[in-house]
Image 1 (cartoon, rainbow, N blue to C red):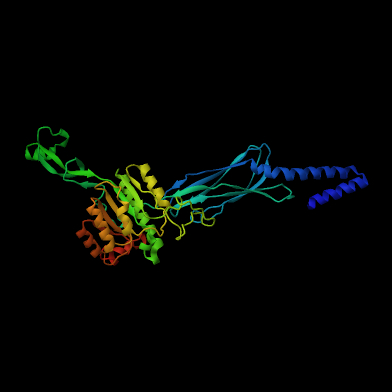
Image 2 (image 1 turned 30 degrees about the horizontal axis):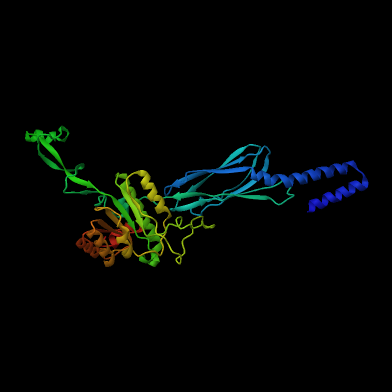
Length: 417
């Protein structure tokens, strides 16, 4: 309004004094005013913004992100200030806040990096761009460009660091039925019989005994495995719920990766909450999906059936990246019905906070249903030896693992481990 008032004053003076130079200034001022009012909002509308990055990352990875700015107009944009919003767990110290100028049809790229330090489903952006005229005659024009998503997988930890033995009784199980023989499970030698393959002959033993001897292997049957992940918040200790549920999810991801690397079929069943499935919105401050309110009805995520392959593992890790603990269904009420769709002989890796008597009897019902449950308790326990003995009598194995920070001292502090 001040500039408009100045033009009116100059125009009045020009008419009174009849000075051509003042008329020239008025013409320039009117043209500058019209241009400054018309061009900046149209310049932002002709600005195209794209992010170039890998939208999935493993825990600990550094992800490069390039923001590509394209001026689709033939006219130059004198200045653009843009700022990128992102979750605090992803930032590496410096905020993405820069100023650039673009000529007509010019494009430029702004590169920054983010650190995947915590699993989750994050939002990159929105990108807020601001532009205006060179003289500051009008308020700067602003435009908000949509955000993109980033999935950070849970950390994958070797079984030895989880506190589990490297050879667990899941995946390929010994079988009395000779469906096939597993070459990785040698059992001894026997006399050569007509029809035996020459590749099975043990030439060293044959030379020593001076008669043909054939290698024998333990029969095996390949069975599917389902990770049964308990994320019902009421089953965890309130003082350590946040850390223990993260540890449980990390254990589930590590076991799934261990099986997938050995070409075993693995699936996932959980009573946690998937905020993306519930239609949760992003939190503006954290850049993460908002947690579901305890008062809301939560629909359990659909089970991921056991399948082999790397692509199937990525599907499981995506689900694990988004899962949150919630008030859903207690483990003892949920586990038996959750496994109804599984075929006979499927191994169940039941990851739950503790192995009390109710949990053990719940897993015993799975044993009677023809499944092969294995209890993996994630909360520290000083008397886990009793739990393990109870589990042995009920027909399944039990293991106790602690958080990564407690592994060094855990074997000394927990005699039942």
